[in-house]
Length: 258
Image: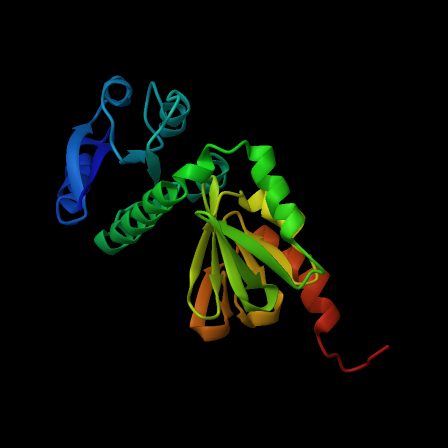
């Protein structure tokens, strides 16, 4: 199965390069490409596509403004030479952010992530129609004694032991829970709401897109954390300092204990 996409980039040379790379990815079917983001807006209002690969820094209409102009936007992957745009992008539930120059392997990873989100959204389509407050209340009621919770998958409730959770990744308005067995659970609850509901003695936010289980930390690096089973998740600077000050410092052996 292929997924339709468009490319939006005001630099014609970079647009040709991006289009060339997209055409090498068998999962993708390029529907159109635009040097003018305003033309892209008109196209998206008349045509449905699965994924938009868009530059952020464009005259007249930025990639962020392009996204905000759409009532029901497709999955967006932003591209920019400036990494400082990443935080704002993830606040808009953008599925991925690529720093220029765009490498083929990085574009493939972003595509895989976008496809995974699209499939999860289809899988949870029935739950999408439920009122958000009801979905959140279902989640709250299932947390019992801070040791396990239930996730709803179709018409079934699956028990997940908190100790088995490795990390949780934001997928826009969904979240993906990864367990030690390598199994994934997709739930219609945002990472922000999960952070409020999960016990902070076990879980910590370490990135705009990630919550980890503290019990599974193996190594904390400058920009990532290694977890049980060789799983590696990114660690942002602001959250790293909070992690070190509030959690790691309390568990670090020192020369002179109090």
